[in-house]
Length: 486
Ligand SMILES: [Zn+2]
Image (cartoon, rainbow, N blue to C red; front, top):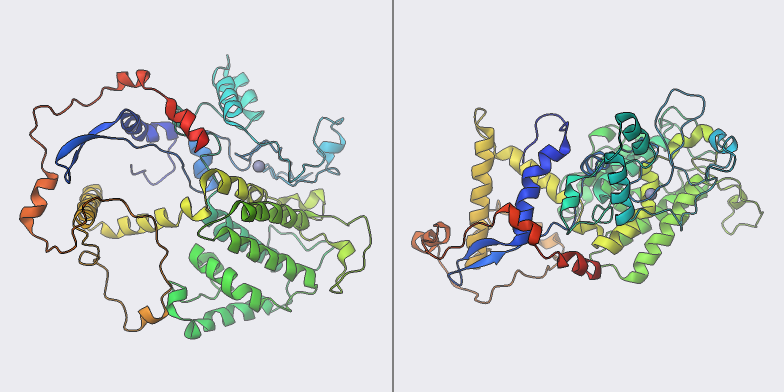
């Protein structure tokens, strides 16, 4: 499916063909097994969907990240910046001194507990969606949608393999590298939504960030190529042009070194390093349940420190910083509530995502973005761009089949030859579980006559008929049951 230049007006009309196809896969699609020379029933189940926050809000039919209930994982209520025309809602944990709460006769939550957020559940999500959709008038519909952040029943809910919202974990790439990191830098450089540093002093001195940018760029000459796909950019000069990959590299490898001693108070630096430690945990190939708890509690603590106001007790600090006045960015001040967008709150749901869907690399957008980049480059014809994409995908699919069937991964790698010494510095590759093949052909030279039969339509008279969509009504939805255990 290829969208136009703009976001689809009706996302469901856009996903409809895919959902129809997935319903067929649920019933089983007759497929030819070239290895066994027979037909089998091919099943496929969609179990996760990812994208940036606006994209997922769209396919979940949610009102979006500026709405009153902006979070797809929980029912935290957003608050606005008081006395402004800014209609965006922000989601700090603490809002006891916000005018809405002060005027609300205890109806409004004053403080959300980071460890006990009002999580959305599958049944509740779909009940709310139905409640909105079945509203008798459009005014009532709007009213109901406002009260839960959901605009109607998402078409994807017809797939029994998906759970709302747990099949839609936050995408680490957008959340961390394209939002959190650049926003922190904006705060440090006094450029975040026109806010000053309030009662704190977390802004870097004049020229400091520019110097860090230059050193970052210069570091490229001494960093082995295996560490990054591109040379580090000057993060101060072309910050907005920096890719997710370059922010990731900067934060994980350079930031903790370059920022040391740059802040007026050690606590700001420590808070940043704590974040990097948590991100490193999230980026592990495998994550134990103990580590997942560490991630959960770590982010709770990090977000609270990000927001916090004056701690009520004095304590002598170990490192000489003023630990009784840790209140970094939000400072529990209603006027500064815009420092708490959904992308800060969403950190509290990273551990939920890992528990439901696995390590962050299993559903992050890097792969998709790279694939889209490849697709763009395969377009050679201005008149027939879509046909170009089609034939490219087909050719890639065919090559994959040949590679797998004949174990010809090296012969068909089709990668540009590596530089003479790039292997020397290369990291050991992670090994994924291999797609099983019970007949491995080790020695094979590619020959058209071997390849041909794989793609011809079998002329078998017993070839089963395509299942009609009417049959889906009778499908045993035991998958839903199994997925719970999964
Ligand atoms: Zn939430």
